[in-house]
Length: 205
Image 1 (tube, rainbow, N blue to C red):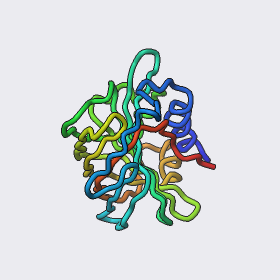
Image 2 (cartoon, rainbow, N blue to C red):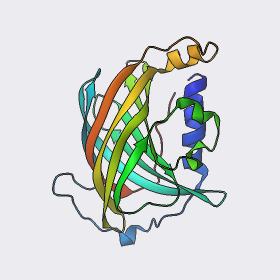
Image 3 (cartoon, rainbow, N blue to C red):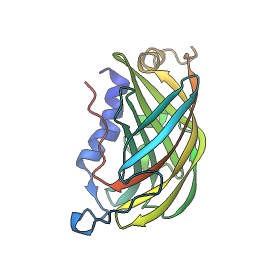
Image 4 (tube, helix red, strand yellow):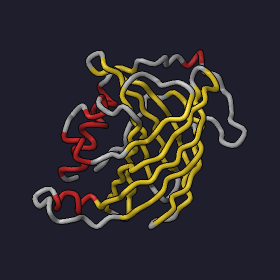
């Protein structure tokens, strides 16, 4: 892929692959608890607005350490023809039960290789594959709620608005920041029952 997608792989993918997983990852301690509506390890949701779709699939969470600094991530990946991956990321250790804001996320923040350590509230980021192209989404505002169901299971709901751009439009815009990029406005909403995993981003070719 080109520069922007390489950035995403470098700053999210390589981080997830190389950082130390600080949360307990002992399968012997797994507690198999199902949310009444969503089975453990899955999510169900919708995209509304300029794009509409029913989405669902895998849900996981992890906490990582970078040079003694923590960041926490929730990850959702569809198991359908509609390929959509979503991340909710914030700095610090696992925040515990409660409802948390999802903040505005400017894609330029990823110029900093450790941007995830400076995000005090959750930032929402997504990738949607459209034929051979990738559409990138950056959160505007919203919230995520979490409830601890067991040592390795966290359930909750998310609802956030996001602006989406085609990857090639972001690349073309990098040399001409005065030119506005064509964008779509969407709302991501859903429920999840996430399990502790060594969360990885998609492998982008």
